[in-house]
Length: 403
Image (cartoon, rainbow, N blue to C red; front, side, top):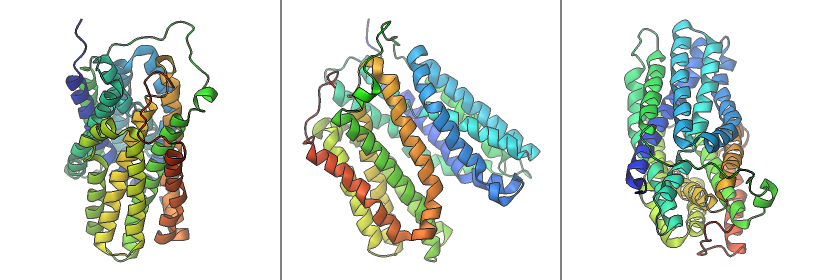
């Protein structure tokens, strides 16, 4: 029997990634504004967005365990169905000015997001199914190619938000959530086309306890790299528009800077996997940490528009290297029967912390200011470099299946 086509599977997953990030762009751009429009008080405007993070946290581990039981394709299709439901409920809530229904839509959207976080791990499974000669390298490339779908979303997402905002005029934003439902439905149809064999773990084969797995030096590095890279990126990205407004820049200027940041986040994905295959995930993680240090140096050097743009671009590339490097390394840290628990716990810890950082970014900027926020992320970034260097992991790609 011929192995499934890696190119076909990865292409479909990249499309799903693009559709998901387009929906995310719409939610980020509109959720708070919808809250202001229909919430009982302005202080509750961001509650639906907060419930979205809670929905992701609650669903992350169950989504991973469910996909281990029923397979990636049915699991991702179920997640896409939740996205359709969230979009339709969001549209109905806005049409009826029902704040609490909009909160429910946010929570369900969070569950949809939890399932889609596993697109990158599904790419690794697609690499496994293709029976490559160099499994670790093929996994890294597949993960990078799927993450590259975000480039499409960076361009198309904001345009779709602008086109759909008046679709149900005079009811603003209702059309945006119909667009989310359509994007999720397209994702459902797309993911139905992937062909990745599903193998249930052998009966009674649960693998090693998480406490034992967590003692692996390279698993610690994998989790730390993705977690610290994501939290640092989220904190500084969220605080940048606030810092720019405080410096007197216009909204168009901050939008320009964010565009460069998103470009830095996703454009390198076309090459990150190949770099990991050539130099090892540890070197790429270390390179990402160095780029984040460069971002902090640029940010602390002045408050010109060019510095904000260059700093956030470096931040995006640094996140790309640390996140994809950490994800690739994590796939080498577990046996097949341990996959669901390791990946689920990794994403639960990561997105819980990311949700908290998004909430705290505005508070910290108000309390500390832009310069101190940049200094505050340095210990964590230096900690990742220390883990890489002190454990001598640079250039030593571990063998798959021998954690």
